Every structure is written in structure tokens, then in C-alpha cells.
Image 1: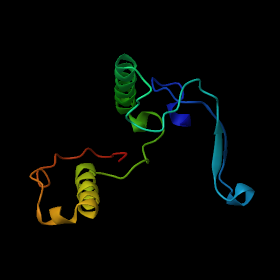
Image 2: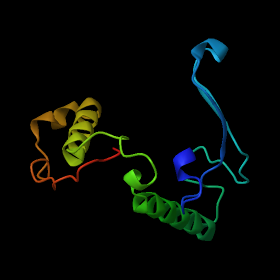
Image 3: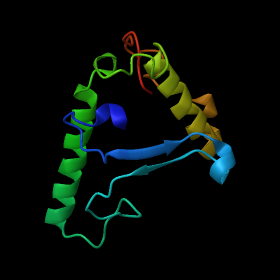
Length: 124
């Protein structure tokens, strides 16, 4: 989060980070308070269709802002796994699907072997 502070991505400002697990039993961090609401599900029945649309557009805009950030320009050039992002994602999706719907393991998705080339570094 610290690397994203001052960029176009809305993030709370980190205040303190503790990596020593002897303090609380696991690493933790504190961040500044950000006004807003927390939702526990994706259906959002408590919102009107207009508010739901506005929320979803805001999520999409925030994701677009994140994807405009160049990790190497904000000190995160070593973050993420190098290359093969699409291949890793397809493998992850296929494994998840086969656990939930075992009868689909004999079906190979048509896009599984047609994944695009990845760039030099990804965050997936």
C-alpha cells in the first residue's frame, strides 16, 4: 500500500507495520481510517439499482487505475511472479472448476491452449 500512496489509486495511508510475529502472533499493520461502507456480499440487495451501478462503475474505475500503475516505477519491480500469468490463471481456474464440478475434468476448455503471451512481470 505504501508504494501506491500518492498515485491515482485510492488507498489508505499505512501508519505502522510490524513483521515480528512474537508481538501478536502474526505480522500486522495499521492504516489510516477511510470513510466508507463495507459490504459482505456481492448481490447488494440493500442498494438501489442506481447505487449498485455507481458502486460497480467505481470498482471498475479503481481496477483500471491499479492496472495503469507500472510496478517498476513505484519500487515494486520485484513484486509478483515473472511471466506465464495467463498460463497460471488458466491452470488455477481449471483446478478450481474440477474440484467443484469433477465431471468437467474430461472437458478441456477451448481457450486453455490459446492463452496470450505474458509480459516480463505480472502481479497475478
